[in-house]
Image (cartoon, rainbow, N blue to C red; front, side, top):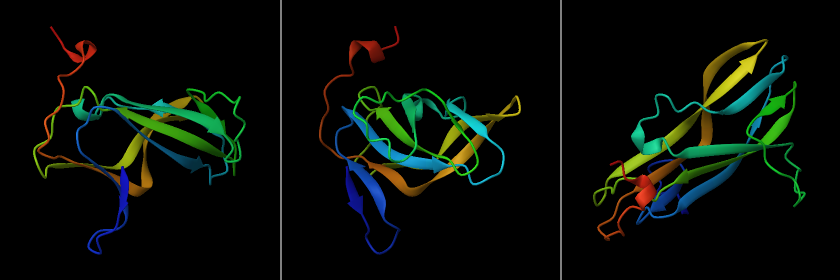
Length: 148
Protein backbone atom coordinates (compact mmCIF):
# COMPACT_ATOMS: atom_id res chain seq x y z
CA UNK A 1 0.00 0.00 0.00
CA UNK A 2 1.31 3.45 -0.88
CA UNK A 3 0.08 7.03 -0.83
CA UNK A 4 -0.71 8.44 -4.25
CA UNK A 5 -1.34 11.97 -5.48
CA UNK A 6 -1.05 12.21 -9.24
CA UNK A 7 -2.26 15.81 -9.49
CA UNK A 8 -5.50 14.67 -11.12
CA UNK A 9 -7.22 13.00 -8.18
CA UNK A 10 -6.84 13.79 -4.52
CA UNK A 11 -4.33 11.88 -2.39
CA UNK A 12 -5.43 8.34 -1.60
CA UNK A 13 -4.21 5.04 -0.22
CA UNK A 14 -3.31 2.91 -3.22
CA UNK A 15 -3.11 -0.89 -3.03
CA UNK A 16 -1.53 -2.47 -6.08
CA UNK A 17 -0.55 -6.02 -6.79
CA UNK A 18 -1.60 -9.50 -5.90
CA UNK A 19 -4.44 -9.56 -3.36
CA UNK A 20 -3.11 -12.36 -1.15
CA UNK A 21 -2.86 -10.77 2.28
CA UNK A 22 -4.86 -8.62 4.68
CA UNK A 23 -4.93 -4.89 4.00
CA UNK A 24 -5.27 -2.72 7.11
CA UNK A 25 -5.77 0.95 7.91
CA UNK A 26 -6.29 2.94 11.10
CA UNK A 27 -8.44 6.06 11.32
CA UNK A 28 -10.63 7.82 13.85
CA UNK A 29 -14.28 8.64 14.36
CA UNK A 30 -15.69 11.46 16.47
CA UNK A 31 -19.11 12.31 17.88
CA UNK A 32 -19.66 15.93 16.86
CA UNK A 33 -23.29 15.82 18.00
CA UNK A 34 -24.90 16.27 21.38
CA UNK A 35 -26.33 12.77 21.89
CA UNK A 36 -24.27 9.67 22.70
CA UNK A 37 -24.35 6.82 20.21
CA UNK A 38 -22.90 3.33 19.86
CA UNK A 39 -21.03 2.12 16.79
CA UNK A 40 -21.34 -1.66 16.50
CA UNK A 41 -19.22 -2.38 13.44
CA UNK A 42 -19.71 -2.52 9.71
CA UNK A 43 -23.09 -3.14 8.11
CA UNK A 44 -22.11 -5.28 5.14
CA UNK A 45 -25.59 -6.41 4.09
CA UNK A 46 -25.37 -4.40 0.86
CA UNK A 47 -21.58 -4.34 0.49
CA UNK A 48 -21.34 -6.91 -2.27
CA UNK A 49 -19.19 -10.00 -2.22
CA UNK A 50 -15.92 -8.21 -2.94
CA UNK A 51 -16.01 -6.32 0.35
CA UNK A 52 -17.82 -8.85 2.55
CA UNK A 53 -14.62 -9.88 4.35
CA UNK A 54 -14.08 -6.47 5.98
CA UNK A 55 -13.73 -6.15 9.74
CA UNK A 56 -13.37 -3.28 12.19
CA UNK A 57 -12.56 -2.97 15.88
CA UNK A 58 -12.52 0.11 18.08
CA UNK A 59 -10.32 1.55 20.80
CA UNK A 60 -11.84 4.49 22.72
CA UNK A 61 -9.79 7.68 22.61
CA UNK A 62 -7.09 8.68 20.16
CA UNK A 63 -4.31 8.56 22.74
CA UNK A 64 -4.97 4.91 23.58
CA UNK A 65 -1.44 3.74 22.84
CA UNK A 66 -1.37 1.24 25.71
CA UNK A 67 0.07 -1.96 24.28
CA UNK A 68 -2.19 -3.94 26.62
CA UNK A 69 -5.41 -2.33 25.36
CA UNK A 70 -7.69 -4.72 23.51
CA UNK A 71 -9.84 -3.30 20.69
CA UNK A 72 -13.57 -3.94 21.10
CA UNK A 73 -16.27 -4.90 18.58
CA UNK A 74 -18.29 -1.79 19.48
CA UNK A 75 -17.75 1.60 21.09
CA UNK A 76 -20.06 4.17 22.69
CA UNK A 77 -19.17 7.80 22.07
CA UNK A 78 -20.54 10.67 24.16
CA UNK A 79 -20.58 14.20 22.76
CA UNK A 80 -17.04 15.16 21.73
CA UNK A 81 -15.59 11.66 22.26
CA UNK A 82 -13.33 10.02 19.68
CA UNK A 83 -12.25 6.47 19.03
CA UNK A 84 -9.55 4.81 17.00
CA UNK A 85 -10.88 2.44 14.31
CA UNK A 86 -8.83 -0.51 13.06
CA UNK A 87 -10.09 -1.60 9.63
CA UNK A 88 -8.98 -4.70 7.73
CA UNK A 89 -9.95 -6.46 4.52
CA UNK A 90 -8.96 -10.09 4.01
CA UNK A 91 -7.67 -10.11 0.45
CA UNK A 92 -6.76 -13.80 0.11
CA UNK A 93 -10.31 -14.78 -0.88
CA UNK A 94 -10.95 -11.84 -3.19
CA UNK A 95 -11.32 -12.53 -6.91
CA UNK A 96 -8.43 -11.44 -9.10
CA UNK A 97 -8.70 -8.03 -10.73
CA UNK A 98 -7.69 -7.51 -14.35
CA UNK A 99 -4.63 -5.43 -15.25
CA UNK A 100 -5.54 -1.79 -14.62
CA UNK A 101 -8.90 -2.70 -13.06
CA UNK A 102 -9.79 -0.68 -9.96
CA UNK A 103 -12.08 -0.76 -6.96
CA UNK A 104 -12.41 2.09 -4.52
CA UNK A 105 -13.62 2.56 -0.96
CA UNK A 106 -14.72 6.11 -0.16
CA UNK A 107 -17.08 5.36 2.71
CA UNK A 108 -17.63 2.61 5.26
CA UNK A 109 -21.20 1.64 6.31
CA UNK A 110 -21.32 1.51 10.12
CA UNK A 111 -24.16 0.13 12.22
CA UNK A 112 -24.98 2.96 14.65
CA UNK A 113 -27.54 3.05 17.44
CA UNK A 114 -28.83 5.65 19.85
CA UNK A 115 -31.89 5.72 22.11
CA UNK A 116 -32.60 2.10 21.14
CA UNK A 117 -32.81 2.78 17.41
CA UNK A 118 -30.34 1.15 15.04
CA UNK A 119 -29.51 2.40 11.56
CA UNK A 120 -26.68 2.38 9.03
CA UNK A 121 -24.55 5.48 8.56
CA UNK A 122 -22.11 5.86 5.67
CA UNK A 123 -19.03 7.48 7.19
CA UNK A 124 -16.78 9.11 4.61
CA UNK A 125 -13.07 8.34 4.69
CA UNK A 126 -10.80 11.40 4.67
CA UNK A 127 -8.78 9.69 1.93
CA UNK A 128 -10.18 7.02 -0.41
CA UNK A 129 -8.63 3.56 -0.61
CA UNK A 130 -8.09 2.42 -4.20
CA UNK A 131 -7.26 -1.14 -5.26
CA UNK A 132 -5.51 -1.54 -8.64
CA UNK A 133 -5.17 -4.88 -10.44
CA UNK A 134 -2.01 -6.07 -12.16
CA UNK A 135 -1.04 -8.87 -14.50
CA UNK A 136 0.99 -10.84 -11.96
CA UNK A 137 -0.37 -14.32 -11.27
CA UNK A 138 -1.57 -15.19 -7.81
CA UNK A 139 -1.65 -18.37 -5.77
CA UNK A 140 -4.89 -20.36 -5.56
CA UNK A 141 -7.42 -19.18 -2.96
CA UNK A 142 -7.12 -20.90 0.43
CA UNK A 143 -9.51 -23.79 1.07
CA UNK A 144 -11.60 -21.74 3.54
CA UNK A 145 -12.52 -19.44 0.65
CA UNK A 146 -13.97 -22.10 -1.59
CA UNK A 147 -17.68 -22.80 -1.62
CA UNK A 148 -18.37 -26.43 -2.51
